[in-house]
Image (cartoon, rainbow, N blue to C red; front, side, top):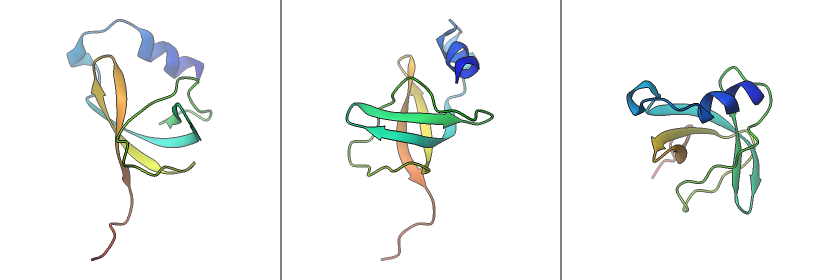
Length: 83
C-alpha cells in the first residue's frame, strides 16, 4: 500500500509512467474500487474508477490505462464469454 501509493504520487514525466498496468480488485465501493498492484499485499487506499458498464468483484484481474494523472479501469481479464 504505502510504498506504491507514494510512487504514484511522485511527480514524474508522463513518459516514465507505465501506460498500462494489471492489478487485482481489492474491494468494490459506491465511489470506486481499491486495487492491489503487483508486488503489493494490501489494497490501495485510493479508489479508482473506470468503465461504468463493468461489474467488478474482489479478486478480479483488471487492465488499467494511465490518463490525466490517474489510472482508469478498462476491463476485466479472464476467459472470454462464448456467443
